[in-house]
Structure formats: C-alpha cells, structure tokens
Amino acid sequence: MTEISIQEIVDDRPTGFRAQFGEFWSYFSENRGAVIGLFFFLAVVLIALFADFVAPHLPNQQFRDALLLPPFWQEGGSITFPLGTDAIGRDMLSRLIHGSRYSLFIGCIVVSVSLVVGIILGLVAGFFRGRVDTVIMRLMDIVLAFPSLLLALVLVAILGPSLINAMIAIAIVQQPHYVRLTRAAVMTEMTKDYVTASRVIGVKSLRLMFVTILPNCMAPLIVQAALSFSTAILDAAALGFLGMGAQPPTPEWGTMLAESREFILRAWWVVTFPGVAILLTVLAINLMGDGLRDALDPKLKRS
Image 1: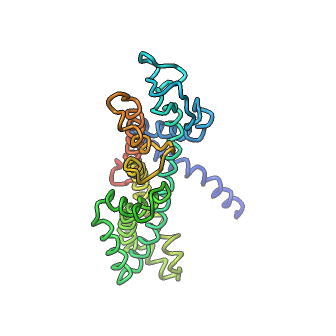
Image 2: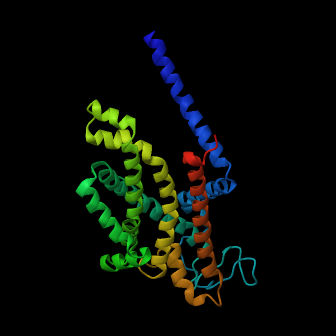
C-alpha cells in the first residue's frame, strides 16, 4: 500500500506541473502582444548567444575604405555591410548584434542584484516590523525621493564612469521597488492561517521566511523583474549616451548613440539603428511583462 501511494505521488508531480504550466500558458497566450514580445525576446537572446557566428564582422573591425557607408538598399551601399558603417568604418549590423550581449547582460545583472537584495530587505522588514521595518523603509523612501536617472548619474560620478559602476548604480536605484513590493506581500501573507500554524508547530524564523512565506510572494516579484529588465536596459543606454556608462569602443547601444549623434543629419543610419534596437527590445520585454502579469495575477483571471 505504501509503495502504491509513493508511486501515485511521483506520478502526480509531473502531471501537476504540466497542468499548472498549461494554465499559465493559456492565460499568457491570450495576450498576443505578450506572445510576440516573448518570441522577439527569445530571438534577441539567441542572437546574443551566437553573436560570434551570426555577426558578419568583428564589432570593432575597421574598414578604412568604407567610412559612413549607407545601408545596402541606398545608393552607394554594399551588401557586405547590410546596415552600413559608422564614422570609422565599423559594420553597424555586427556592432548591433554584439551590443545585444551587453544589453541582456546589464538587464540580467541589475535585475538579479536588485531582486535578491530587495527580497531579503523586504522579507526582514515585513516579517520583523518595528524599528527594523522603519529603518529599512525610510532608507528606501530616501532613495525614491530622488529622480532615478539623476541619482544613477550621481552614483556613477562618484564611482567612476564604467559599465560595472553603471549597473551598480541602476541596481541601487531599482532597489526600493522590490523592497516595498516584497514587504507588502509578506505583510499580507503573515495574516494567513498557514503562517500561524507554522509558528505554532515551531518553525524557525529563517525557514518560515524563505521556505514558507517567500514562495507565495513570488508572482508579483516575477512581473516586477520582467518590467525592471527593460528599465535597466533603458537606464544603461541613457548613462552610456551621457558618457557615464559603457565606454568606447564597447558596442553598447547607448554608447553607439553617443558616438554617432554628430552625424545625425548626414548619416541617419548610425543613430537610427541603435535607437530602433533599444525601442524594439524594451517594447518586447514590456509586452512580455504585461502577459506575465495577466497570467500570474489571480485577480485578472476569469473564473
């Protein structure tokens, strides 16, 4: 009888996971924009992973006989450089492809750091309350009192212009959103019966926080992480454009915009294509985040 029960449990696990995933996908796929955003984002990820094989040239390779060459469909263009070249003869398509690596890297690092630290601080604030909660939340309020880009600029100016320092500054700026969201979710969960029951049977605080409560708070955090991913890319591009982020000759999209702004009137492609890359990537991530919100928020699900 015991063997049968164990086997039934083992057999039910994948079925339950498939059922949950099927329910998630049914809600997610109802949002066509979210599905398009997901596939576009996956395409960007694949391009970034295989950039060395997809890009026709090295990102910093210079062709002195092809300065400011237009895209291939314009007069004077060449299929060798499908999207043209920049002021020092570097292939625009190759730099855009390699630039996707930096944008995804920035998003992953910023979201990971902000999410982990924000969850820890939010759990501590929502679980222990009192003076600990007051100190943490007042610090978060101070960070929120400053315009995000201005605060990031100040932090990068203090730390020094570089891609790493830009990511640190953006992570600090995004921190309060995760802390406040986690704290609110924890405070809601703390009033429920399963938490009271766990306390009664003697579950220790750390286990209660990270094993019992946290999994039930993850849905809004996942949505926030998806939306913050696009914000991180935008902020990094803005810092790069202002010369405070990635430094030349790094093929980061914001830095590419900064390098090409003086050619905006006579070589439109060197400004347009990095801007379009940022626009489409951020739009795809935002659409995907809307789909995640629809699929994970029980208030938005139809009965």
